[in-house]
Length: 442
Image 1 (cartoon, helix red, strand yellow):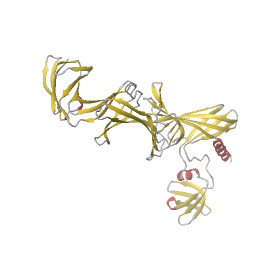
Image 2: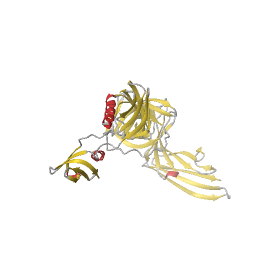
Image 3: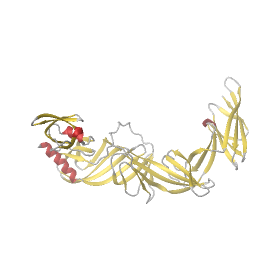
């Protein structure tokens, strides 16, 4: 009788709980901070309370309860949810009724269950029944603290009775967000329109209904976590939201915080897309780059300055940027994509699209000289061939180690840093150009 009354109290308190506000802050690394508020009616003293729903990806050690004169004495995270196997295990030594596919009925005390058969004690004696042939199982008695979904089972101490507000916060795994960008360039590759989206992937095991949604961009350090509790996963639906557009961005600690100015629902097993900002136009430069350390291909790169003057001028979270361009018929065609890192405002964004088809480069070391035990010289020739019907400029990038300097060069170059030298070489249409230089190393 005592166990029944404890179970009844837990159900009663849960039934009197009113669902309140839900807020979730999602981090790039694949976890979220959830806050849920409830209004409960509770008596004084020590009593049991079941708090649900909670996500199956919850980190129980991060749970924090905030309420006036209410304290958690014990907490159990109940994630071993009820099913036929668990019902059989929980009803050992209890009465059970079994109906087989042949119509036989067995009633008695359940003694054991191994997953494939059960052993019951009937008036006629001990009977083993194979579960494969069972049509129906009836359990006259409901188990104590019967959980059908992940639940925080608390033992609470309340210093006063009555209604009060409570707020619970916790971290959960299984939810992540990533920025994605769509860019289109004009005919002359001089202007770019950038559209930003956020993709939220929720496999945390819970739906967040009408939630206040915030995103944190930045590399937040967390201690290594133990493996998460098992969750059921399957392909989810893609939801798309675009009106009203845009998150509100603000600096937060050493990161950036993006707040959606309206409520949103993020369903379990769903990928949701929300507009990050309105389309922004900016000037862009197309660069053809030959980097001798990366093979013989000539790379095609787009570069723009992330400034207010040139657009978009806001911190850009890391993500994939996909670039499109109209063909002669006016249809957009995909021309390449790249992954960008977190980019503050007033920094350059560089997008690698692929390798040029009609431009080739050939790098040759033509000579080597040992000047002394510690000094040597190397001669290089880089031939650039342009098969296009227009003039181009190619940036040649060379990397060196140790103490070095360019002794001679056919075209004037620039030392970009301690290991890099660059030359900008004009190449005529349907023609070639040759860069020659000598580097001395110490």
